[in-house]
Image 1 (tube, rainbow, N blue to C red):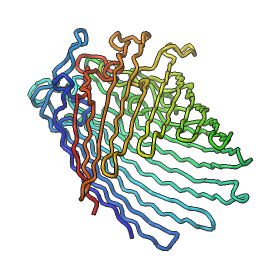
Image 2 (cartoon, rainbow, N blue to C red; image 1 turned 135 degrees about the horizontal axis):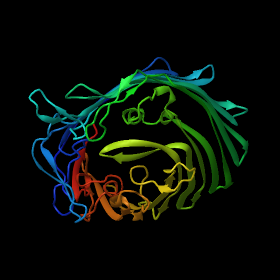
Image 3 (tube, rainbow, N blue to C red; image 1 turned 180 degrees about the vertical axis):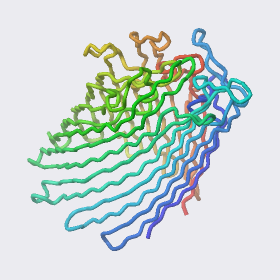
Image 4 (cartoon, rainbow, N blue to C red; image 1 turned 90 degrees about the vertical axis):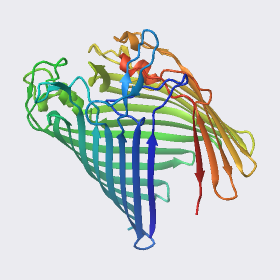
Amino acid sequence: MDYVGAVSRQEHGAFFDGGGRRIGMETVQGEIQDSISYDMFGKLGYWLDDDQNIELSVNHFEMNNKGNYITVDGDRSTGTPTSARRGTPEGQTPYNRAATVNLAYSHSDWFGNALETQIYYQRFRAQFGTTPHFPFEDDQGNQRRDQSRNESDKLGAKLTLRRSDLLNGRLSLATGVDLLQDETRQKLVQTNRDYVPESQFRNYAAFLQGHFRLLPPLTLHAGVRHEYAQLNVDTFQTLDRGNVREDLVTVAGGAPSFDETLFNVGAVFQVTQWAQLFANYSEGFGMPDVGRVLRSIDEPGQNVDDLLELTPIVTDNIEIGTRINWRLASIELSYYESNSDLGERLTQENGVFVGSREKTEIQGVELSGQLQLSDAQRLGVAYARNRGKSDTTGDGRTDTKLTGMNIAPERLSLSWDAHWGERLATRVQANHYFSGRFSDQTHANLQRFDGYSLVDASLSYRLPTGRMSLGIENLLDERYFTYYSQTARDGDDQYFKGRGRSATLGYQLDF
């Protein structure tokens, strides 16, 4: 038998920026400021014999906001950040709760194959804070604000068979099936109204993947995966959100189904003992955010079976690159593209997130490398740059840049790891986020990103008993507005600065 057990509790107060100002609270979506979280994990394994293992794991995570602060709006025109002050927010406090149970069985020699099976269940609840976009009148005639809660239950299973000794070890195959059932709804807590009706999503997939060493320096891989998905939604009525939508709309229910066969193929060529070239092509399959689609319907006569916005997102992805391991240096450089004829671009309209189904194209470059200066010292570098556009006009041309709601910033990272004898180890890391412009955005406040640089440092010292560690984030106490605040969220209540210098002291003892 083998086992793992873990229990943790974390409590967070308010955060402060580099200027000593309290950072604003995300009171609707929730966040880790002013919160208490609990995490309990247990795993028990039992070996039936040398080849067979059965394993049960259980995890419960919970994060609750304490509700001690309210938002103080900033002012983008003057560069004043959103802040917070002591107070009691309206309504119930936000929280996240997730419970997962997983049962797995493996057999390393089932008729010459490696067999892996698992069945899992997850219960997820996420309650958001109050918002003016859900007004209602209580029994006394007072105007109040409502809040929503997402309720999701997932049940799934996986089975995989692998074999690696075919054709004298040159061919390996893997095949299997994935099964998923997801039941989700989003309701309003105070008035028990449906914000998003209950939907049941089923997804079945079967796959076959192979790796073949064609020549000593050349390895090929290819695979096929067939996806079948079905969505069931009963007839429902959309929610009157006051200033956002005046009229209720009845939407006819339905059970649309989708199936797609996806392929992938790639190759790795060993040019020399220290240099590799690789290339891959793959197709991806995923459902859009069903809740965002259903709750955003505002035209009468719609039915779930005919909603184009519920069509799965199918992406074509390519990647080419090289890996080099030469003496004391290693480097990997790759270029990739991810395109979809009907992707999903997130936008914010009247304070509510909306998913727009549009043609999207994303290109990017990634670089990572290490230089071993000595047995005790190592330098590292990482660079990532991606660009994306979508077709907002429907003319077939991608003409609008994707912003921070959908894409990460261009970033350069440098690191230095060192061991100073047998006891002391240090690490210094710097991240630079490059500035950028999004001049084709309709929101004037989101057309420019002012980059910033952050430096972190840590050290670890081995004591006669145990190990002491010290970590410092934002070592130089940089004052900056976050990338997300500058490029994704319009409004003076979402203009957040980043956290100032913060230190963490830890002690670890193995026994």
